Length: 340
Ligand code: CP3
Image (tube, rainbow, N blue to C red; front, top):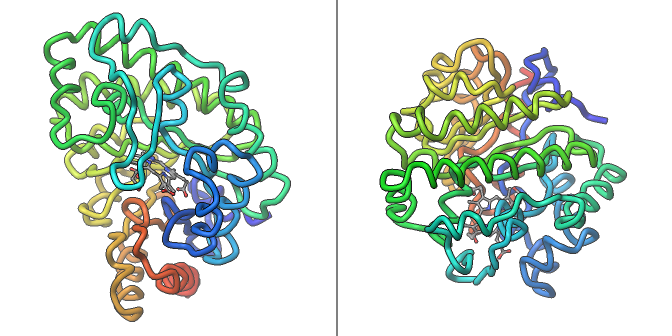
């Protein structure tokens, strides 16, 4: 078992810098497309044998140091009671967006074993097959709230922010319900065998720091604190994090994941010595010539040296158009250059 990733999460010394890629299983890989051509996305997520198969694809092809469960952050939202559909061009659509007290009351805090057994079965299959650690995941409370209130992706998140400002009690009640769901869902993933968990806060960066700190962050801390009773690293990925790092620093996670819009040296300095750092290559750098990819890998490795620990990753998910050979070259460069 290659435990380099887990060691780096805990801030222990490693022989080289471990690396994995957010969204490493996906459309940029022909092996994924082949599986996906036969089933729709939700069926893929809900069929343990297939979900396990696509989780495993990037491990050997890319040579990464960790696997991430193949699923989606909206699977848990569907289990809370919202009808979910994925359309190839439009992305996710959640029916009956929640904007009233009756809507919030209708949502349930699902029992994972009852309503998402396929997630736990996928984890159990993977633990038998994998030679690298398995990361479980969930959306963070705020990011899930935006999908629940908007009913899908959004441009300015007006419905969500309107509820936050016009009906703070209702919004708080919704966040509490989501946070309880996140804790139950990730606890179940850990009990089934997940060896680390990541919270995706993909939309944190659209908040004013004031609102993030006072309204959202307490729920992040509650979730992380509850998960810390298990002996597995917790990673908190904050997209567009630059203006929030002083607050994020106090989240209690083992690792903070940062996007690419912040300089790695500044992010490491702001986060301090209590937390390891994950990131932060711009996913678009994978479209550059290999020599330039290598230059940028070296730059990030240098800048992360002062951190408690470093897990190399992209600053957000890999794009579907990415040439696979460039992703392979990036992983190889991280391993080679960090050993030197
Ligand atoms: O990282 C991995 O390899 C694990 C799989 C994973 C997926 N989604 C698979 C997926 C993970 C960790 C996610 C998380 C997720 N899902 C997030 C947070 C991370 C982020 O990117 O910010 C969010 C916001 C979602 C919601 C979501 N899922 C959207 C908005 C979309 C449509 C946009 C798109 O990329 O198509 C998805 C679909 C989705 N999730 C796909 C995959 C592989 C594409 C589905 C397909 O095969 O057609």
